[in-house]
Length: 211
Image (cartoon, rainbow, N blue to C red):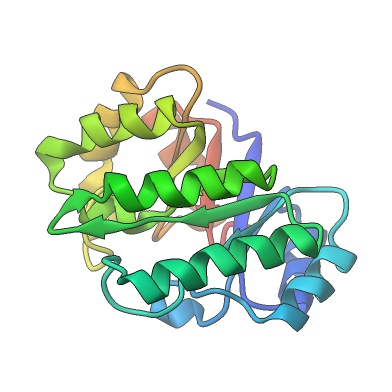
């Protein structure tokens, strides 16, 4: 299975430019990658959108590190971030809300509606891995029905090698509706990406060392 999209996770405009030069053809923009990626600051968003104009830039909307169960103030902050991204000319965002190991359907509905009203395309990030395995298929179908374009997943805790979680990702790849993409990430590199993509039968891969 030939890789068509190599999505590079970066935390600066300079890193985005470097990854693009090395062959990345989609960028995920964050701050604090060591914390799993948080919302980047306004200056970084502006600089990256100016620097990267020929491939998509997906902007992380995650107000803090830790779990993905956000309170009302944090959800309001996320909505304000979506508005800001749209105002700055962004087109693609990634977020996820998971509470008690279940997709928080109410919070996700709120954020997805807000994003779509702003003409932003939505991706679910690795919060998906915090959903109990038995509930992941239902969550995947719900996300697909609500216009989410991709789900980024590792298949388990990041402490676990992706070679050990492939079977979990494979199950969801096999079950996924045609209009949603399963995007493997977490431990993928330029060296192992093709092998993993071929094993899963996917065309898109994600990582901070993907090129």
